[in-house]
Amino acid sequence: MGPWPMPCWTRRDCPARRRESQGGRARRLPCRRRMRRRPLRRRLRAGPRQRGSAVASDLSYFIPHHGRPKVSLCIPESFNLYVCPPSCVRRVSIRALRNDTRGAMGFLFLTEADVATGAYEHAVAEAVAEALTTLERPPRAFFIHLNCIDDFLGTDEDALLDELRARFPGLGFAVVHMNPIAADRGLSTGLRIHDRLYSMLQPTSHRDSAVNLVGTFADIGGDCELFEVMRAWGVREVRQLFSCADFEAYRRLASSRLNVVLAHIGSYAAENMERRLGIPRVDAPVSYDLDEIGRQYRAIGSALGQAGGVVDGTCSQEGRAFEGRQAPSSAADDEAARLLAQAEGAAWDAVARAREALGDTPVIVDSSAAMRPFALAKALAGYGFSVCAVFALHEKDDDAEERAWVAAQVPGIAVVRGESYEGILDLGLPADAVCIGFDCAYLLKARRFVDVQKDEGLFGYQAVRRLMRLMEAALDGDTVWE
Image (cartoon, helix red, strand yellow):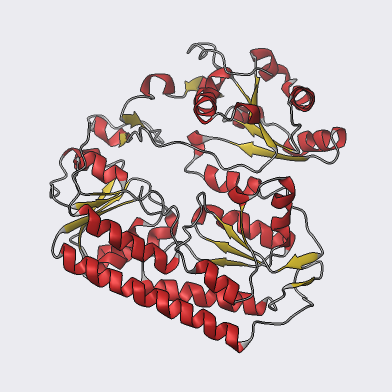
């Protein structure tokens, strides 16, 4: 197990660069090495290119986010073991150096002999043993990361996990597949990885009053009304994966009474937690529509009531029958209603102030700012803002309904996508627009920049209040781009 990856394999001898022979001819993947730093990168497309077709049709725009830290979500007291050719983990190792997380990962490099014989599967156990004996604090859980080469190797995941669990009882193990080449097929890599983060939780006979927030990577700000409303409903603790201090705190996630899914990336994990652990879920993705926010809070409150309002009690194996103190009193419901009404009123006031301040100033919405950019555009258009474009460079299926609404109800809104190379070259968008998100602001070199990243730190009425304040502040902004 090496500490850091060796230099990139050459084009000729990198097994990850080759595919199975099809029709007697071997096909190669396009070279990532040469295009890594280019803002324009080639995309794989099925079928041969038609004669005379534009080269631009095979290009998509890539925007570098210099200076923004890249941090991977992980569970405490865990170790990440990457099993792949050396060239495949250069980014991971550089990120570990920058974030000073070197003690939490290691690399088992594959040789051509490993690929030919499959001997690497037994070497994984030896690498785990080495980590347990050499690290100052032995890990309690291991994530085995298999790169896209595994699509050709066909690792027996179940057999590998059985071997590891038998040799190292009491430790948690999970296999994570990372395949950016097939990112557009089936479950996305993000959905699969997020599910694996919760896969080590075990069913429990105890169910407490806590609620899990699933799908979020950053702490929701203390100015959010969610926590006070939860307390009024009898929830003693709101748990989040990244806030777990140790492995025992992570295991307590399995005792929570409800999962609230704040982003689509957590939906598959919550679905499996409901099936395996009996924890019901409510989908409440971050929204900037005040009516939708109200519906989300009603759904959360209803789910907590249906769960029996247990503060400390037990549940059946299926997690359905609860014993203990019953649902919150009417006084608690009244307090929650008062808090929500107060938060909603403050949000409407913030919308009115921002609407008056911006007037007819054009607004551009970006998928780097909101996980559902079309939902954000729909909400802003409904408030009367002059939304002129949506940058959907990271478009998701969970935004499809709002995308159709924008196309039907506000046809004047331009939609810019990553594969639309010609559109990026000639946008024709106003230079004085308020740009919500890094990508559109960077492309347009906009001085009016609203720095919001993937809805981080936002939820409920607080999300609307904070966005409105940032939009107002951006009017006087003078962002300078290099």
